[in-house]
Each structure stands twice: as structure tokens, then as C-alpha cells.
Length: 126
Length: 170
Image (cartoon, rainbow over all chains, first blue to last red; front, side, top):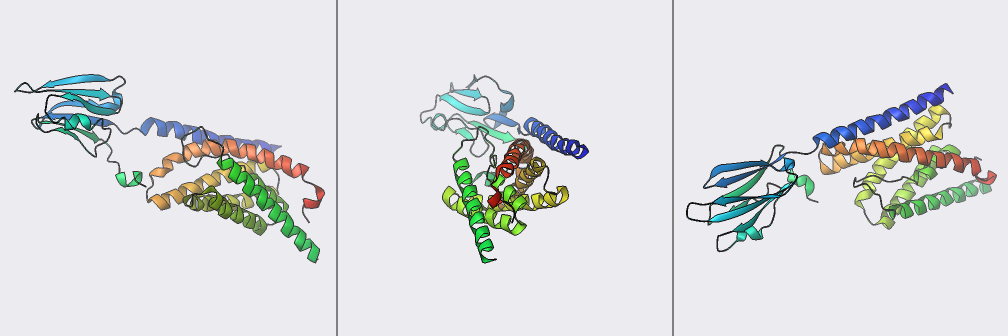
């Protein structure tokens, strides 16, 4: 009988360790994603994408009347519209990692995502 | 003497078939959590029953056959490495505990077996992916392992209780 209680105790201990560990992992496991928006190579905006809960847009006006609208979403960022002729940046869609930045060459806009924790991309490629 | 060893062969083959069937059917059950490695582990019931009723090497043989054929039928060869690593660590742990607890408290042996299985899987994943980061999955696997292990342990207890006399220990 005593053994029974001991064994239940060990089981509950493992379960508790697992629950606490899961809770801990869930809490720390989101690396913060920071989007940096550059205009003419000058940082004009820094947005923590992990903190974004609702989508919104930012409009950036250039010196010669160019206009870029950037849509900020939870964990992602995209160029919604641009006044440039080719709109390559708009067609790129939204990005959520730092592999390829969004660049609007005619209007000198660059959006890059930097994570605080440098994740290894090799792990994610199978 | 001859007929006895034939009988054991047949019984072990039967157990291997049951374990394989459970393994293949279980692979078709969708798991509602998006964590790799989480499963019910129902096939472990058979491993545990064979381990208690027969010898370690019989259980190891049944386990090996189940994992090899299960991976062939299941289609994913990469899961063979995980299953082998987890399965045999699980078997070692359960053998040790069976000796220690004199084949009683099967539910506890099963829980520990599930935990050992998860640890083995994580070790295999660390070796394959060359990263320690997969350790973050361990807490989740501990929780599901405890719950599923408890369940399979009770199933194994019931199964041994209802096993026909002719299959029991020779």
C-alpha cells in the first residue's frame, strides 16, 4: 500500500514536471521579431511584430511624391501598395522571417525582419 | 519438449501480429495535438504483456518485429530510427522496473516505459537533426506520455488478467 502511494507520487511528479516544463517552454519559446523599415537607408520605424495583435497600415511618403503603404500584421509584414511602376515589392507578399527583405528599389524603401534570436534555418529544411 | 517450444513460437508470433495490427491501426488515428512524437502507444500493451509473461528476449523479438514491419507498412522509414531508439530504451526501462517491482504495478511500469520511450525519441531526434533544440518537445511528451502510459498500463493489467491459461507463462 505504501509502495502504491510512492508510485503514484512519482507519476504525479513526472506529470507536474511535464506541465511546468510545457508552460515554461510556451512562455519563452517565441523569439521576438522586429521589423525595421528603412527609407534612403535610414531607419524610420521599428515594429515588434510579436506584439502586434491587429493589422494596421503605415504610409510612407517620399520626397518626390512617392507613396508606399505597408501593412503590419501579427507576426508578418507586407507592402500593400506602392507608387512605383513595377510593384515587385507588392507582389512579394508578406514576409515573416529575415531570409528575404522587402525592397522597393524605385522608392528606396527596405523592410527587413531581424529576430533577436538567430535561428538556424538548416534545422527547418528537411 | 519440442511441442513446448513450438507453442511458444506460435504464441509469440500471435503477439507480434497483434502488436503490429494495433501499431498500424493506431497510426491512422488522428492526434489532435500538433507535436511530433505524440501517440497513444497502444502497441506497448503487447510488449508489456510479453515481458511479464515471457522472457526479455521474447519481448525484444516481438518489439523488433513490430517496429520493423510497422515502419514498412507505415511508410515512413525515418520513423524507424525514432521507434527503434524509443522502443528499446522503453523496453530496458520496463525490464528493470519489472525486476524491481516483481511484475506488479504494471500501470507504473507502463508510465515509466512511455517516459523512457519519449526520452529515446528525443535522443534520436537530437542525433538526426544535430541540434539540442528538440529538447523543448520533451515536457509536452512527458505530459502525454504519463497519461497514455497510465491508460496502456491499465489495459495491460486487464489483458493479463483475462489471458487464457494456455497462453500464460509456461
